[in-house]
Length: 217
Image (cartoon, rainbow, N blue to C red):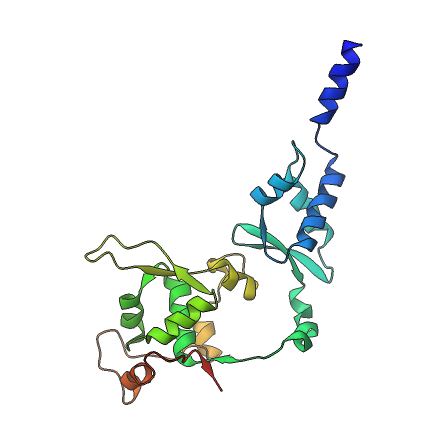
């Protein structure tokens, strides 16, 4: 009798088969809009489950399908296959183009993070308006990082998981090279740091101080 009780108690703590764990992970991912970490999955699944192993099976099963399992930072999410993204264009409510100032600021943060405002201005060769940074923060594409251990301890900026998710990147190392960005017209050559800005460059940011210059009409 006691042996039967022991076996029943042991069964309560046995992890479900890996196939069942795979189904659980799949259900959670499809029901959650935001990327989910392994820690989050583990908290939702029964005791003894191995969500990391289950993710491997889910990712393999969806290879080549219309949706795919993508790693975004330290989290996971089901997303439309990159080559089928054009099918979702009709779902876009409005497409607004980033201004040159916003693109360059965002690119500098992505490639040089963690980076301070002064360092951004040094790299760009012109001042950065408060409106540009505020709008990037509101979009949740950048966030405040740790303070630098330099005089004044200036705050730094880094890109967010939302930024990686939007561009289908696992991490910032997957960003295209600077030459690719320039050839695509996303970055323009700037005067070297410390040189005098060209005509109109200094006014680019100052004339819009306090206003949103993130988007162009």
